Image (cartoon, rainbow, N blue to C red; front, top):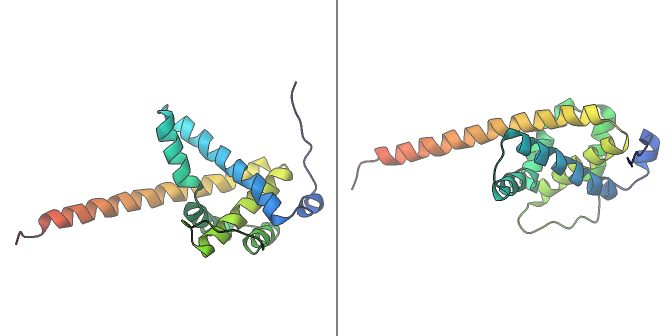
Length: 157
C-alpha cells in the first residue's frame, strides 16, 4: 500500500502557521541531509549522525538561508520572512536569536514547498545549500591548517 498525499495549492499551504510549516520543513530538510550523507559513503551510524547534526543545527541553517536568499522568488521570500518573523519561537541556549530566526524561516520555506509538491524546487535549493556548505567546510579546514602551520613556524622562546 502506497500513501499518496495530494499537493496543496499555494493558497491552502499559506493557511498553515509559519511554525507548522517549519515543523514540516525541519524534517524535509533533515531527510535531504541524511540521504545525501548516506549516498556519499557507507559510514558508521555515529559518523552519519554527527555529520547530519552539523548540517541541521540553527547556525548552519542560518548560513543556508543566507545562501539561498538571492535565489528565491517573491512568493518564496514572503514565506521565508513569515517563518523568520514568527512569534512564539523559543530559542535554544546554543543558538543566537538571529540564527534561530533565519533557520525557522528556512524550515518554513522547505515545509511550504513540500506541501505544494515542489520537489524539484526543494532539490534545487538543497543543492545550492550543500555546495555552499562544502565550500565553507573547505575554507574552514584550510584556515585551521594555515593556523597550525603558522603556529609551527613561530620561533621558540
